[in-house]
Length: 551
Image 1: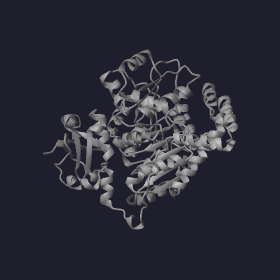
Image 2: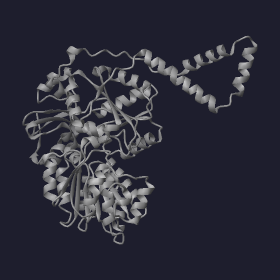
Image 3: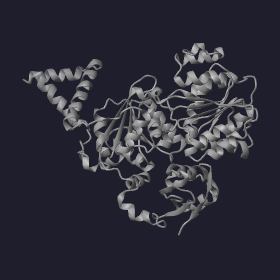
Image 4: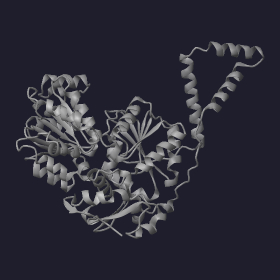
């Protein structure tokens, strides 16, 4: 299948494809659409930006009986952002069909969702928590007549502690229902899930050389952690940035970074898990419209964002997992366009760069930061471009009259222009050019202890506090979980479980320390008992554990 026109689907779907400007299918679409149209189950391994939504949307819509008002297509996603993105795409593909699509996710009133389900919808896109509520608590979502079910970004649902919810939801689907599972990585838990719920599934893999990374320039800058902001400011001045996504490790860091950028007149917004859905959508709309040029986000907040044409992705904090790196930089260099991915790397993180290069099979180029002379020259170049652009469109009658008057007083035209430009430049608010200290060769000594502290967002001066399992910050309570490194517990899995299952804000979770067979986590005192109660038999990677209060 080399062209969309050759696939055997309804004319209305081909009409939608043409209207959307699609011509050539992507590798995942070429491999997934034929078996799905034949009614087979598939397991697809593909990263963000490979076009997997169309790969399952077209076969699903082909199977929908538009004369019947019950739910026939169902897509489960890990986050509300991805759910919204997928539902919008489904509506675009179904533009010329009488198909109703409903998106359901937490934080949204039940009223509209319940009303639409009563009136009848054919496709539901949702997140695990809200879907389960609508199935069991509200008795409103009936999947018994489902024809086609999709799990999108299954590995993210595993990381966020949703795997048990996913199993419960799939148990509600009929045996005859066709299923497709898509995941960027294939940990054993996801393979077990696929083996349990999918029948003779065809395995499809989009290898790394077909990812969007080939159109993305990948650069790294070796800097001290304390110099990251200074380095970012320098690059923001000299890079040809249309818009940029900046990834930071924690919610606090994203908020602080966005605030710092605003101080120096870089229009920026923070995007993290504590924002309301209205605030998130508002920030995203401002970014899409170009009102905000820079979006500072955490990985979880940015998952599944519907953002096109991002010119630059900055890894302010390098991610721990190579897969997360691929997800991040997949935001740029899409649809054949070129993009730039820039990562700030400390001396202790060099080994992570090697791991990422091994995963992507592509080099990350070590580059030098622009110096003070480069920045000053760029400012002159930008000012010159502004002058030329202004002269092309503006009427200067009053200014020309003033120039003639000054020339009549004996001044040369070039002197008048130079003085005016000097006044204009003095009025521009340039940020200070911060100094950046070089990283010396002897500093590049990766330390496992430092890496572990970095994972928890802790600095060296907190080492003594970490050594006591009973210590915690003021207003925080330390809880213990009966699972640890031996059970492949990761910090974000713990945060995801607490935030999603106990329904408490992510900022109420503090330091996390993972031992071999035990995990310690600080939780705001007001939520401690709620976490213990709600996560009495929580499951991670197929193993059950519980939280207890220490001290």
